[in-house]
Image (cartoon, rainbow, N blue to C red; front, side):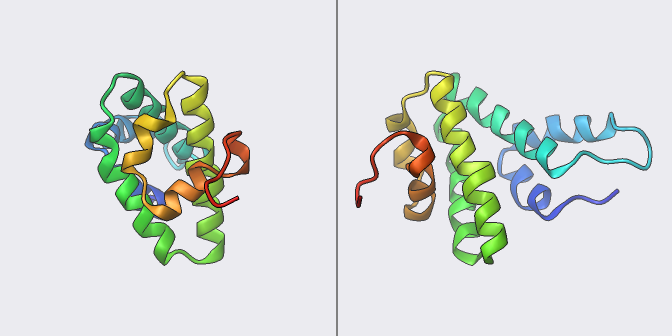
Length: 127
């Protein structure tokens, strides 16, 4: 089975994740593939792990790719990226005890808006 658009666009932004994800994909039975939710959950868990290990700079390419994708995204893709990647990652990072101030320098404006959105529990600068 082929890769989804999100897999193609995001998996290689984190080389350590790309290797792990390829192994997970191969573990699925022949003729099946992981869902987009499986991919996004694994991606977020990997990013949270990197952040919790203090490897924040390693994620800068990932956040840069998200920022670029948000700028080019149609409304459906933008919603998926904002809700299922960025906002969910912000929540999962907080649950892991990661101070968002360690992450914020790596966020572009669009990504920061989604990170600091209503579900973050943190005030937005322009509210």
